[in-house]
Length: 61
Image (tube, rainbow, N blue to C red; front, side, top):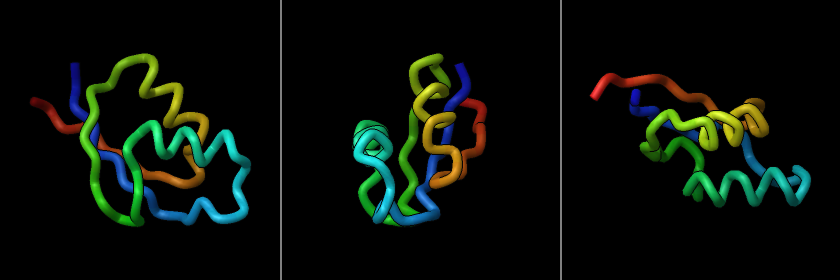
């Protein structure tokens, strides 16, 4: 599996509670701090839910 580097680039203030829970589930706490996950279907679904708040790139591991 490929490894993903995920960064939050927009604030969760004013977003629905579900979106804030998804960000917390991804481990995103502060803006522009990277977190690393493997590209599983569950993680990709979470990223699709909050794609307007985050950016991610693939890194081969």
